Structures are given as structure tokens and as C-alpha cells.
Amino acid sequence: MKYWLMKSEPQVFGIDDLISRPHQTEPWDGVRNYQARNFMRDDMVVGDRAFFYHSSCPSPGITGLVEISKNAYPDKTQFDTSSKYFDPKSTISKPRWFNVEVKFLKKIPLISLDKIRGNSKLSTLQILRRGNRLSITPITKEEWSEILKMCQ
Image 1 (cartoon, rainbow, N blue to C red):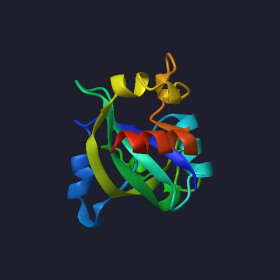
Image 2 (image 1 turned 180 degrees about the horizontal axis):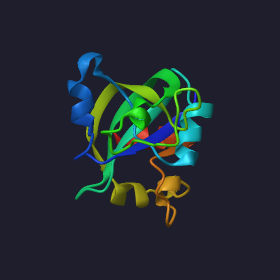
Image 3 (image 1 turned 90 degrees about the vertical axis):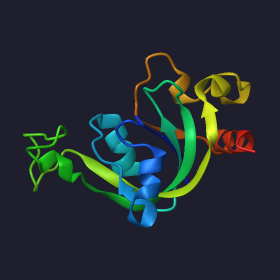
């Protein structure tokens, strides 16, 4: 099993949106960064776990736990001309963008970015690196365990 941190802006799609979905499952679509796409396409598999992180908001931080519930497949928003994620260079036969599906596991009290920064055991998290803007980053089993301890 691998572990991940997946960021979303709550005004676009937040943990409560995921909770309200049928079966509490949703495609993690609209990702338009090649490295994040590659994580989904090449590395994520059903059963992997991830922290749901609210970003670009007044109180950024981890708000829940999700599980990868479907392996990567072509992101349909790349083909939708009315979508802000439309990509005219993508074709059905040669898609550029992929997404996985996530399933809600648990909502947790916010673990703020400041609390994450204040934990020396988490100093290697990619989200703490200057200039990191990736919406999906891998985390180690040790980092996963440390963050879970912060939930209690």
C-alpha cells in the first residue's frame, strides 16, 4: 500500500462534497500537472490511502482520509469543450490526462498547515517545500503514521 496527500480547493471540491456524493466516491479529475498525472496513472492503485487536504483557503490543512477506489482511467473533462479542463490536444485514442477515483473514509478535525509545519517528524513532506504546488504528493508510511497520531 502506498500513501498520498491529495490537495483540493474547498470552494471547488471539498471533503463535504465527497461525503455528499452517491457512494461517497468521486473521480479526482481536472489535474493538469504532468507529475501529479503520472502519480495517478503509474503509481496509485486501488486500496492506497490518502489524506484529503484543503488548499488555497483561509485555513489550509488535512481534513479527511480517502482510499483509491478505482485505478487510473482517462479524465473525461479533457474531452468536454464546455469544461475549464478541456484539452484540445487530447483525443479518445490518445488521452493526455488521467484520474483515479477516491472513496471517503473519514472526516477529521482540521490538521492545519501550521501544525504540520510545527511537527519536526513531518519536515520532509513535499507540501512543505518552497515552491511546491503539486496537487498530489506521495508520503511515507512513517509520515502517514505521524499524521494519524495528530488526528487523535
